[in-house]
Each structure stands twice: as C-alpha cells, then as structure tokens.
Amino acid sequence: MPVVSVKIDEQTKKEMMKYKQRVDWPEAIRDFIIKSIEQIKREENLKQAEQILSDMPELPEGTSSRLVRKDREDST
Image (cartoon, rainbow, N blue to C red; front, side):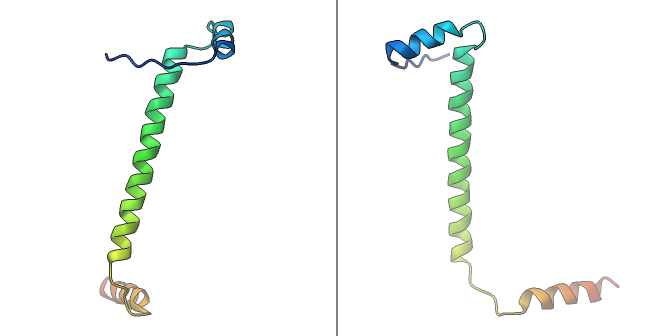
C-alpha cells in the first residue's frame, strides 16, 4: 500500500498521542480521505447531471400532465 505523509504542528501531534488509545489515527485519516473523494465525485456527478439537463430542450407547458393522463387512460 502506498504511503502518504502529512505535516502537522507539534501541539496537534501531542494531542494525537494523548488520544492514541481512543483513536486509530491512520484509519481515521484514511476514512477522511475516502469520504472526501466520494463527496467530490458526488459533486462532479451532480454538475454533470445539471449540465445534461440544461442542454435538454424545454417541453411545452402541460406536457407532463398530458403524458400522465394518457398513461392512466392507456392502463385501464
């Protein structure tokens, strides 16, 4: 597995050492990185979906109602 190192100030390091029995710091950092990447991907996917939708032509007013009504009539 590749290694990533991070520089932190001395006070933060002391605090980490103080709580090392309660927190698995490498696991916590890995989880943070993975969740951050997932969040960025969700944001990118949303932007892509918004772009696709903005490129779609608008339908005339009442189209949705007409299609729903037609679907209900056809299913009876």
